[in-house]
Every structure is written in C-alpha cells, then in structure tokens.
Image (cartoon, rainbow, N blue to C red; front, side):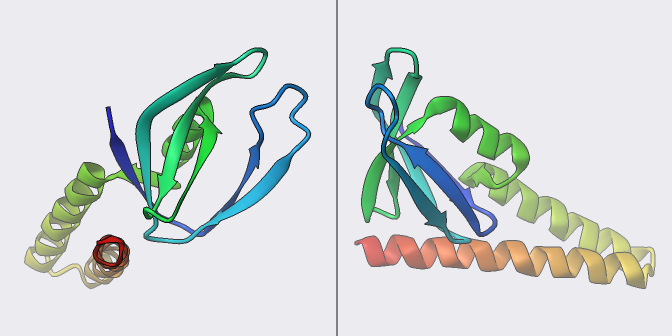
Length: 132
C-alpha cells in the first residue's frame, strides 16, 4: 500500500541507520509542502523493529522507523492529502460562518489559516509537477 503525506511545517528529523548498533545517523530537513511517499517496501531489523522505505518528492529515499511516521502524524507535522482537503473544506465553511455571524476576528483568523493551508497545497503541487 502506498500512502502519501504532506509536511505541514519545517522540521528536522534524525534518521538512524538500520544496521545493528545504529552507528550512522543523518539529519534530514523536511520543508513545508514536501511530499512523503511511503512505499510498499519494508524491512524488519532485529532490536530496532519495522522500517519502511520513504520517498521524498521523488528525489531521494531512505528507511524510517514506522513508529516515527505515526509520531509525526499524531503531532500534526505531516498529514495525508485527504486530511489536507478536508481541512480546506472545513476552513471554507468556518470563513462563511464567520461572515454570516459578522465575526471579524474569527473571519480573519480562519482566512489566515486557510491561506496558509492553501500555500502548503500549492507547494505540494509544484513539487509534483517538477517530479514529472
């Protein structure tokens, strides 16, 4: 199963190698709008657990501990494409609702968040176009 996630905020992630002893470590910087594709390739490393192959913007690949991906998702650092679309629809609704209620403060807050999410989506789409 291939899943795609979008990076919502600039973050650095320390990736350890999959060899016993974990002597090699690298810092990977994720930019807002990067697309992380979880490929179907997995491997189990004794004492370390399951690792999945991650592809970033079709530029490079690395193995990442499966629980780390779940952690990034639960912290809100990454989200699925469908989650992003749902968030955009929700924010559009909240903008309309604030307009109807003449609530200027809420309107401005929701518009700011909507613009930010749309910017992330456009960065993601630009990365997709450059990959092809």
